[in-house]
Length: 66
Image (cartoon, rainbow, N blue to C red; front, top):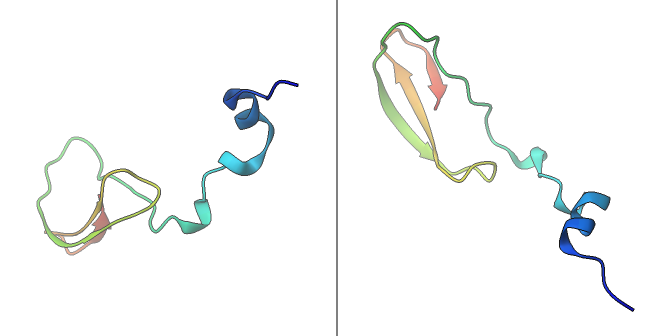
């Protein structure tokens, strides 16, 4: 007998579900329209993304991840 194709397997089960319990941080970007400067404090690698996250301290004292 034949086998199910990869696309058929992906649609049927939770095997290909994203591991959201392992995500480190939620990314929020500053509001558009104004320029704000900041300093990179740390670089963090997250399994949710292919690019690393940067922990930034902005000039107004806020900290965030971009």
